[in-house]
Image (tube, rainbow, N blue to C red; front, side):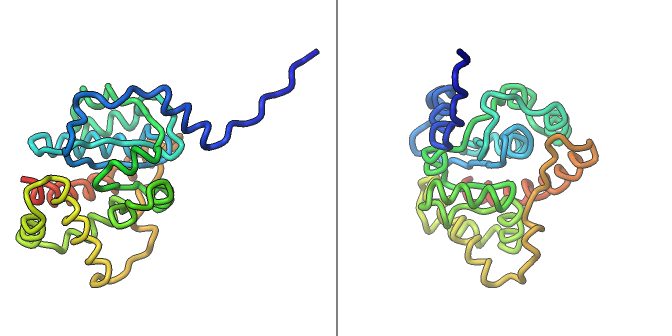
Length: 228
């Protein structure tokens, strides 16, 4: 007699399975170190590109850069197209090759100091998982747009007022960016998203990178000023 089909796993069960196949935090997870979390859907295109590129730009800065996916394809590598683009824009070959996708969970979200979502839908999921991150979660392009109008002097002054602890300095940077929401001209919400290239043409991958890289450069500038 054929067995009955198994019921589909709930979202909570899927998260537990994702956690179970991921290694525990390693020695690199230094207590007190500032953490940036990049978030997309599968964690194999946009967010790992952003992770690898930001890490390459800030290798000399005391900062951890991580990534996860709202529906992470657990343990999958970056797509070949994403790998090629990441390397072309300056990512380290070791970082690109070592990436394995993971699921975005509440502990992962809550442990970050800043969350940069690739699109508004990812920002929503991250905040739902960790409501305490509401004021420290932005889409990447939104944060870049907000912080571009803030001078190095303003960033440094706000960070210095927060003290020497890296995580406190990032809190100050997040607050400074959030303040700009009330003074800048509004833009179309879609302009704050990075297009999803997964299973699409090479031209779409190029377009996605063209949106991602300038935003990362603006973010890297702000993070360097705040933390160095």
